[in-house]
Image 1 (cartoon, rainbow, N blue to C red):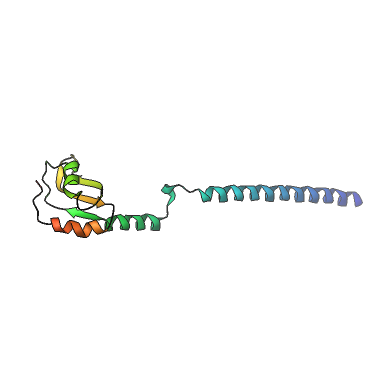
Image 2 (cartoon, rainbow, N blue to C red):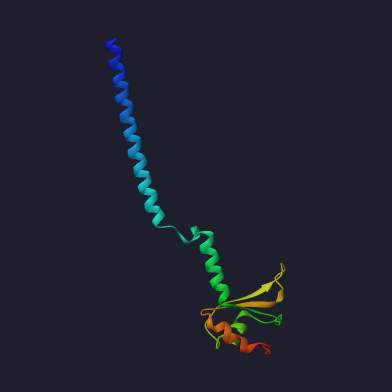
Length: 125
């Protein structure tokens, strides 16, 4: 019976050793994940962060209706640039890439939105 106990002890020690190895490996993996977690790329933003960024852009943007179909983004940029720094001009188009007659202007600063209202009803082209 003593020989059986020796074998059981050996087996127990081997299991303990294997468990320690696994715990060390798990700790290494956790450290690696924590390090990677500190360097999360922008594409991994949370939905809340993306929504907040989108809301912030919306507060700096205006809708422009009745845009001449021949208007270019450059012409709209030129028309609005004295109101504030224009980040982006988007002329919406249909699936055939024909302009729909309206655009969005994104400014760098929120104050430009208020100022841009002074251009309301002005003929652009």
